[in-house]
Structure formats: structure tokens, C-alpha cells
Image 1 (cartoon, helix red, strand yellow):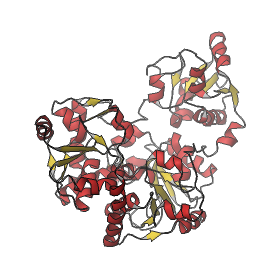
Image 2 (tube, one colour):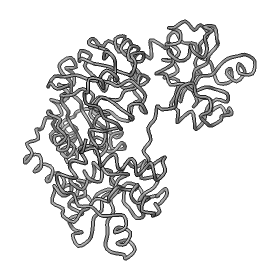
Image 3 (cartoon, one colour):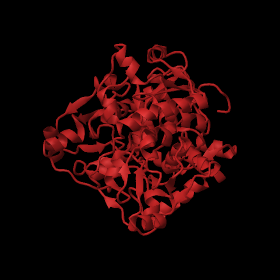
Image 4 (cartoon, one colour):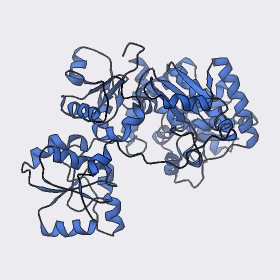
Length: 510
């Protein structure tokens, strides 16, 4: 980890465990996510991978899965996280720690100006000329926002620079849920020449902690920058790239590099919105809108020291993403020259839509799985001792599940299920949101000797579509429901919000 070689360190515990404590700069890939994400996270199967947990059980299973999927250089960390701690090696707590710590360093190092929630409230009440730009995703914005805010997802803010320069007599306020995207968005605009821009201290959480009401479910869509401002953004970005010595690569060369999957690792990240991506993108590109690319870098770039290439419509947003990744310390970043436009003009083909990648190993597992339909399961539940196991997320289970079913994370299924159901002839039907996780879980159960295992065809979607009854709640969990970590801004009280904000501020002091 101290070298400049290519490697990946994967924490295969649940997301909640990772949130409590982790090896610094590891990537969170819970064991149940491996088949779904590993092809994008580690596209070269020769790259050294080290997996770890707390006691070796899940790590051993994860290593076996990776080996079965063709990864050639997989190891388990001897002694796991406890041994790492005993050796007094670097650890961290929280999610997306590298990006959030970077945001705090930017805040301190560049002296990012802030505005308090109280001051912003006063400006709004006095009808001062004011623009509030919300850097969060459209999904986050759609839940709630600062009253009157405009949604400009973080990666798109460069497109607004020219338009905002016309508003020099007013105040421009940048906010997110907490701190990082507000800080980075403000810093980006200031780097591009705006001096009347400030970050809202602690974002929507700070607004709530100050005792003010959020606007609930705003109907406004994410704003589109005026065409003149969008065109000027390209020129600004090109100047930034020249100043910062950010290299460019042609789309044709990118496609050639991508074909060489056994030589190093190259991530191709499209930083446009999901709708733009759906309309057409370079084959093989991963869609991570710019603000999220910076906010969650460790979630998408698992192989350290690999090459990262950003692409956008005309390269403006891609340059900004590359600029921030350079600032974060990624050594090898580049931008597709001219964005998608030259590629399309030269007749290059584009992929369309958002494909739902099939989990690695799914087809092989599905060949040996017995599927049953929703109506058949309804009858079985009334006539036999069949146990229904939901292996989706705990959030999905909490919202709606087959009545009487149990929840278990697939990460634990070979370890914990035999403790509860020792009889290997026990009949199980597995389900999840669709049926993909259930198929992989069924394969695991067959592998440890359970003989009566079936999968609900189509999962809960099919169950609901067929108008079968569901029930909510988390009362029937076979393991702790710590697979999902929600922001305190979504599900948390004021104490949780304050604790989270304190944690962010403290990141640079550790």
C-alpha cells in the first residue's frame, strides 16, 4: 500500500461494520456485492487483491469466490482487521473517508468562505439578491432542499460559471447535505474566477440544526445552464487543463486501451448525468456524475495507481473531475479530448441505456437452481414447513417482504444459517428484489449440503406484481441489519447530524 504498484484491498464485511472501523484507504465491497461489482472495480484479473474481515470466515469465502471467477492473485489478510490494529497500522472510521478528508483539507488550505444558516436565513427574509445552488444528486434534492434552492449536481457547476459571473452584485451560496460537496463546489467556482460564492456551513443538516424548515419534495427539476454559459465552460476548462497540465487522450485511443484488459487497469468514467448517459455513451464507460465521482472516489476506483480517464459531452465537466482527482493524489488521470463530440462526428458507435450488468457467475449458478413462481410459493407456505429467506438489502426487507419470511445478508448465509437450521433437509425458498442475489445464495446453500432449496422467480417484484400480500418491518432478522449506511440527513435525529458533522471536521486532525 506504500508502493506505486497496482493493487486492491477489499473490506468484505458489511457496510455498517466498515463504517465503524476500516483499514485506511481500503475499498468497501461486502461479500454479497462481489459478483455484482468486481468486474468494474478490478477489471484486470491478474491484479493482486487482498481481502479482509474481522475473523477470516467471510474473507475466506470471498477469496474462494474471487478465485472461482478467474482472479489469479487473491490473498486473505492474516488475522484480519484485529491484527492490523495490533500492529498499529493506519485505520479510519466512516464511509468515503478519503474524499471527505480531502474536502476538509481544501476547506482549510484554501480558506473557503462560508455563510452560516442564520445569515442565509436573514438574507432570504430580507429579499436580498441570492442564488442558492444545491450540489446534491437529483434524488437527494427531490426529498428536501433549502427553500428556494436550485439543483445543480456538483459536476455540472462548471457549466454555470459564465452565467453566474453576470450575478456579481448578488450572493451565490453552495450547499449539499453536509460539507464536502459544498466545499469542493465553492472551491471549484473560485478556481474558475468567481469571488462572490460561499459554502453554506454544514449544508442541509446545518440548516436543520439551526432550527429552520427545509422545503419538502420540491417539484423543480435539475436546472440546465444557458447555452452561452455551457460553451464558455469548455474554454474555461481547457485553460484549467493547460494550467494544471492535465493530459488528453482521443476517444479512439481510449477504446484501444480498454481492449487491453490484461495490461494494467484503466477506469473510464462518464461524469455526465444519468439521462445524458442513457442517451449515448462510450462503450464500457461507467456513469458516475461528477459530484459523486469526487465525493465517493473510493467506491469506484478500487485499484490504486491505475489510470483514470474522464469523459463528458465536450470535456468541460471531465476536466473538472480530473482536476479534483489530481488534487486528491491520484497519479494517472486524463480526459477524453473534446468529449463525445469528435467520437460521434467520426462515426464512432455509442452504447445506449443503462445496462444492468449480470453478476459474474450468475448463469452458471442459475443452471442448477430450481425456480418456483409466486402462486406456487403462496401454496407452499400454507401447506408445508417451507422457510422463506430474503437475501436482499435490509432496507428492502424492512419496506416490504413475504409475510413470515426471515432476512439474512448473503454475506453470512453459509456461516449463520446452519446455526439456526441444522437440518440439511429443511426446505427453503430464497428471494430478494429480483432473483439475482437469491440464485447466488441458493448456490451457496447447495454447496454446504442443503438439498431442498428453491428461488422465487422474479423475486419480490414478481410477488408484488401478482398482488400477493406483503408485510413491513425488521423483526425477523437472522443477523444484524448493518448492511446499509444511511446519511444522517436522510434518517437521523439532530444528535446524529451533529455527530456526523463533527466527524467530518475532525478528519484532518487525525
